[in-house]
Amino acid sequence: MYLNKKYKYLNYIPAPVNLDPSRYDLVDDKEFCTPDSRTPLLMVIQYGIFPSGGFKGKKNYSQLKGLENQNIGFIGRAYLSNRERKRIIEFFLDQDTLKQIRNNDIKINLSLWSEKA
Image (cartoon, rainbow, N blue to C red):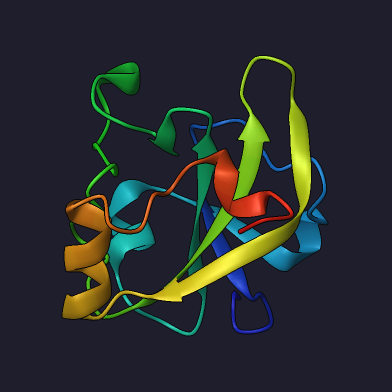
């Protein structure tokens, strides 16, 4: 039962390095987008939100479609080197925040974890 887990994570992308597996459930796309007590957790790489279009024929999450009006978390990870940032950054995806992300006013990439952000 997932009620004690804080996060849910896609079962087909590389698992988090710094997050204890007891804190998240591995789920498919349908369960990932279905609102419940867990926060969907996506990976952010140097190029933006991952997975994006074309990854293993799966859903494109670059525009966060299907995750509207939910709290969502991001793990920062340099995809090729597996270096992962220590903290999770969370946003509530209301219409205004989604608009800013989709218009690139809020840039979702590894710069979110910089000292200057």
